[in-house]
Image (cartoon, rainbow, N blue to C red; front, top):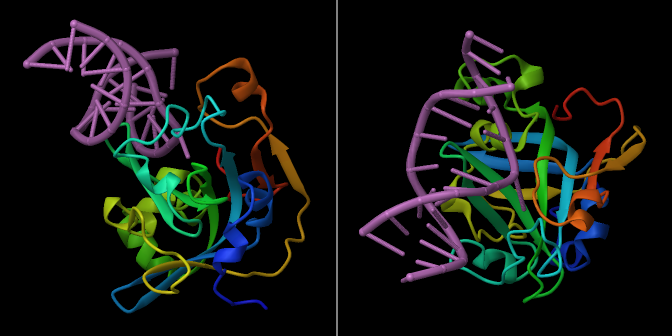
Length: 196
DNA sequence: GTCAAGATTAGT
DNA sequence: CTAATCTTGACG
């Protein structure tokens, strides 16, 4: 059903299954009475303690504790002194798996997003993990938030994407050779809101 | 306490 | 290509 809030069962699978399945789903933010929403066009899967590129690689810490919690919750972290990134936790408690939302196609509340990002052109509004968090006012306060409640921040079922799904190596990661080579980035081919 | 690195972005 | 910017986590 299009528009239905994604239930916990959706997230309770491997990040490698969830990441491509999220493409075409809606990311929705309720902010001061506005509904801000966009279609997910790019994701990356991060596994647990066996994935050298994952924040979960060295086990639980105060920062990544949400990753080891229940699926369907948000993991939001701060990076490079300026930016927040949004993940959805997948698998089962203790796995440390998550999917990074890297880009969305803005659909609803675009003027509000533009105001938050100093009138950025629509194509540059949410085509990156840090950019979409700024546009949707996602920060540390939403770390650990339950995305299945349908309040404040959640995901909804969308129409199946018309664009083909592509995959490739993850962007900007460090780690061993296996982590660098793993094709765990998923995106909609030809969509202009995919990051660059 | 100290320090290096970071799942990025904007600007030259 | 490089600077910005500051939190985190490892080490001691």
